Length: 106
Picture 1 (cartoon, one colour):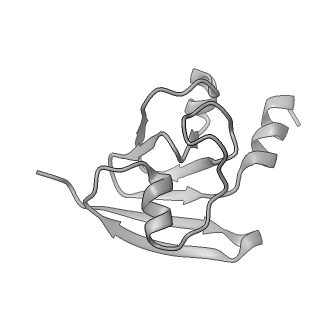
Picture 2: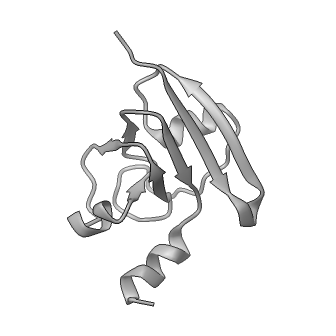
């Protein structure tokens, strides 16, 4: 039996603030697409960081991905193409530039 999760996508710079309720066990990228929330992506396999988001609250799990290290995940970063919500979540979208700054220590 599926659990219902509320996902709130936010990005002030891009004017995104949209909430969806889902009981589907699909990657966050696909759930967003189904609701016309346009997230960036390239590979859809967890091998790049184009779809990187930041978890503000809630919890997600990843399927196989090669981009993020454990510390990145602890900081809240996740890939929308391989991330699955396991609770209600608040998700900051379009975090590729912020992730690059984080990795550089800026």
